[in-house]
Image 1 (tube, rainbow, N blue to C red):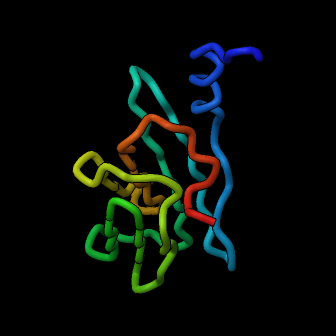
Image 2 (tube, rainbow, N blue to C red; image 1 turned 180 degrees about the vertical axis):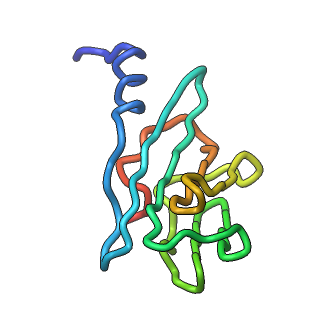
Length: 116
């Protein structure tokens, strides 16, 4: 049976941005992988610009919680294991977009942001 080249697997992990979220709480996420390390960027467009004191993000090895201005935008178990020390968040576009950077514990393809 055919073996897959590492470049094929690499391309799979860099497959571009995907949409996520429900109930009007939309986000986009994208996995990138290079040098044997993967990270995921999650982008939340915000209807109203916020400041950092409005944002509460909790990174756990197997879970993620995102609350902005008292509204829970994302909560749940992650598809894989997050490296908490390598994860961070920031506000961009004058506070109208929240970006999360998740460092992944393993360089493996995530098929979804949250566990099914």
